[in-house]
Length: 113
Image (cartoon, rainbow, N blue to C red):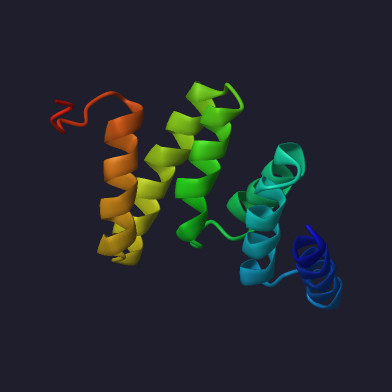
């Protein structure tokens, strides 16, 4: 926990220095996932609002919404992420989002035997 606290302190300092840096916001959202899901949500929502082309956000934000019991919001974020990643030509992110979305919708066809 000590390492997480110092990493979080450092990230918060980076954020104070440059609150518009998408990577720092993303790192804060990810770090807070382990500590405070609502604070994590706040940073993911900031990314979605202010940095909509930061495609790495969509997978994690949608999963968080689903974990928080907000499946409609999760679906909305998955769909927007699929659209944005396709527009950005980021087929790796698109593929990962498509797999996660299919699993979310119960459409993954993997053998469970």
